[in-house]
Image (tube, rainbow, N blue to C red; front, side, top):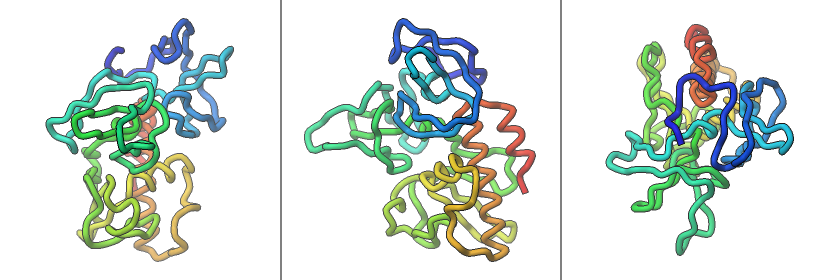
Length: 231
């Protein structure tokens, strides 16, 4: 499997769907990726029309092996399905904390798993005014600006993006909440707080979500548009 490219080719083949050519498709219909099994409303994905087979762009163009700065010294191997192991009835992504149902990056030594989309997220949004940084777990103080849960919540021990307001006060958002925001493209699932500070948080979080979306769909135009629209 070739390394992921910044430019997604129009046509490709994939080991998970041998013998058929996948075409880069553009549309607006929600779909379930037949690789990672996660739902999405990406504007671009790979599709085999006769088989009704769909793949996220980031799932289609995966490297066989990767390392991740939040797991230094660990090598992750791409697998078509989660591995079975004693004591593991199901697998959870060690990035976002959600279930792993299909394509996965796996580290056998520590039994670590990452969704392809989580593994593709930028660790630092360089050039961003408030410099959102991907962190291994939620900070001890404060709550996620979207779900309102803190360190002791279910998502508190998984990845989050941390950044500062213009006045220097810290804020963060869980990666899992960010994925939900990214896929919805709205703030409808956010808590019913409408203070000026909360609305500023939502603008920053939505910008980070759009950048994450552009990175995982390998859409450089979307990346530039998201950053340019940063409040």
